[in-house]
Amino acid sequence: MMDQVKSRGLVLLGCGKMGSAMLEGWLSDGLPTSSVWVNDPYPSDWLQSLDGLNLNTQLPENPAIVLIAVKPQMMAEALPSLKALGNGTTLFLSVAAGTPISTYQDMLGDQTPIIRAMPNTPAAIGRGITAICGNDHASAVDMDLAQALLSAVGQVVRLDGEHQMDAVTAVSGSGPAYVFHLIETLAAAGVKQGLSEELSMQLAKATVGGAGALAEEADDDPAQLRINVTSPGGTTAAALSVLMDENMGFPDLLTRAVKAAADRSKELANG
Ligand SMILES: NC(=O)C1=CN([C@@H]2O[C@H](COP(=O)(O)OP(=O)(O)OC[C@H]3O[C@@H](n4cnc5c(N)ncnc54)[C@H](OP(=O)(O)O)[C@@H]3O)[C@@H](O)[C@H]2O)C=CC1
Ligand SMILES: O=C(O)[C@@H]1CCC=N1
Image 1 (cartoon, rainbow, N blue to C red):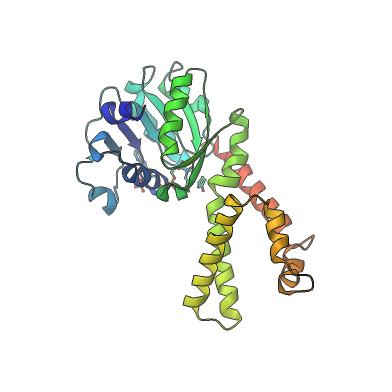
Image 2: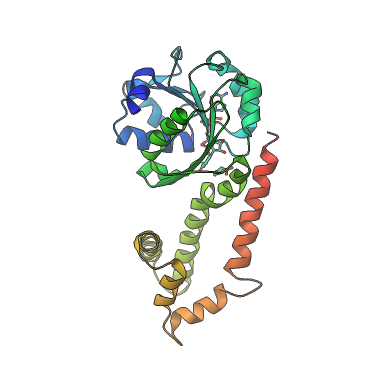
């Protein structure tokens, strides 16, 4: 399956933070730079340093996949450059938040196989998770090809339909930022308790990384893992009484944050 990508080529339209995170993962997985075409007006130093990459050159005539990773606001400007590849056997895979499949069909032709995907930046180290859903022209083979490509940078889940994409974006697409902010604020809180910045950051990163890995690997669910940390009448219980506060705690705060992200994803549908 991936041989097709190697021989026919992979095109990246837009290669900023998300495009680069995925490309980094694919290159580490063995995709040769000579099979990759990147079209980006201001390529990063990293992209420019990649030997053999086809950077801002003429695109292949029939690439296996075009990955669209420009911002939703740039879509109307960026997509027309790909029109010649529409309505053919090139599979389009878009990671843009909000932009519906219908926008790509309108601009690339309504016979074009299109898969919408929502990845996240841990893809850079092969620990991403990507949710996908395709249009009627994305065949089972196309879905398998997208799944094979995305599996190289982490887990892949298939959605029941496009209607789930806004919620997925709010949970796992944006989610890493919530966790990074948790690390920042946990480290800052440790400094307030008298630790050095360096030590507090080391403790915070290892704690979030270790807890995340345990949550994925353990048989117990996260609620039980939390209970396992919480000695009756101890320190964790004291902290959780703050974090689980009905009005000002994590549940209310995260519910509102995830809703704000999902609402913004819906707004971005209009560019
Ligand atoms: N960042 C993330 O964690 C995630 C992002 N996404 C989605 O990925 C997409 C990209 O986001 P992100 O990587 O964060 O954004 P970035 O701004 O980092 O990347 C977008 C890239 O596209 C380039 N670009 C702009 N216009 C064009 C054009 N006409 N042709 C080709 N390239 C162009 C930009 O160049 P320049 O900088 O010069 O404008 C930039 O390098 C978005 O649609 C976003 O919704 C999805 C999941 C997670
Ligand atoms: O912030 C954004 O809009 C993109 C989509 C998900 C993560 N980053």
